[in-house]
Length: 259
Ligand SMILES: Cc1cc2nc3c(=O)[nH]c(=O)nc-3n(C[C@H](O)[C@H](O)[C@H](O)COP(=O)(O)OP(=O)(O)OC[C@H]3O[C@@H](n4cnc5c(N)ncnc54)[C@H](O)[C@@H]3O)c2cc1C
Ligand code: FES
Image (cartoon, rainbow, N blue to C red):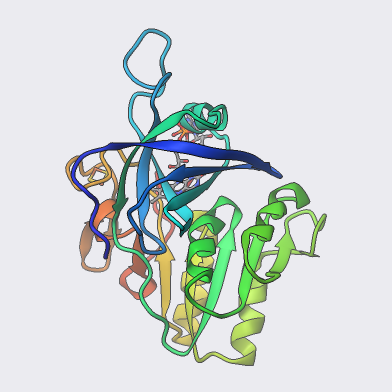
C-alpha cells in the first residue's frame, strides 16, 4: 500500500478533456499510487465555505492512470462536486489528499477485469499492471467511449445496445468463467453490478476483489461516515477498502453506497 504524504497539497491541472459522457483531468503529482487506491479532491477556488460555494467537503476519486509524475482522473458530472471539477481549466490547481485506502492485490490464476460505468476508472490503472480480459458495461455508446482508455479493446455491452452487445456485463463474466474459471475477478461499478459479480463468483468459488464506493467525508478513517457491514462486522471503506475481498461480504448491495 502506498501511504499518502501528510496533509493536502495543490496539484496543477495540465489537461481537461471530454470523453463521451465523462471528463478526464490530468494533474501533476510525483507520488506513485497503487491501482484501486483513491484521492480526496477539491478545486482550489469555488469549493468551500464561502458565499455561493458548494460543496464544502472534498470528494473521493480513484485515479484512472498514474504515469510520468501525472495522475489521471475520470468522472461523471452527477452533483455539485463533479460539476465544479468538470468546469476546471488547464492551469488551475486541485487540492489533493492521497493516495488513500488499499488497492487491488495480485491475481490467482488469470485476471478478469469487470467494470460498470464510471467504475471503470480504477480498472484502467489496473490494466496497466495486469494482463487479462477486460469486460465492460455502460448505459450507452456515449458512456462506452471510456473504453478507449484501456490499452487493448475490451469486450463491451451497453444497456441500450448502442455499442457492443445489448446486455449486462455479468453475462460476459459468466461466459468467461464458463470457459475458464481459474481466475481472479477484479470489479468496480454500481452496487447492483458488484452484487451480481459477488454472487456469481461465490457460486463458482472464484476469488473476487471488489472496489466499493461509499459516501466519504474525510477519506482517512476519522469520521466513520463510510462504514459498510461485512461478515466480520463493520469496516471503514476508506481505510479497510475501498478494495475488499468479495468473500468478506454478505452482500455488496448496501444502502447509501455507490453513486
Ligand atoms: C473510493 C471511491 C472512488 C471513487 N471514484 C470515482 C471516480 O473515479 N469517478 C467518479 O466519477 N466518481 C467516483 N466516486 C464517486 C464520487 O466520489 C461521488 O459520486 C461523489 O459523491 C460525487 O460528488 P458530487 O458532489 O458531484 O455529487 P453528490 O452530491 O455527492 O451526489 C452523488 C450522487 O448522489 C446522487 N444524489 C445527490 N443528492 C441526492 C438526493 N438528494 N437524492 C438522491 N440522490 C442524490 C447524485 O445524483 C449522484 O448520483 C468514487 C467514490 C469513492 C468512495
Ligand atoms: S470517510 Fe471518514 S472514516 Fe471513511
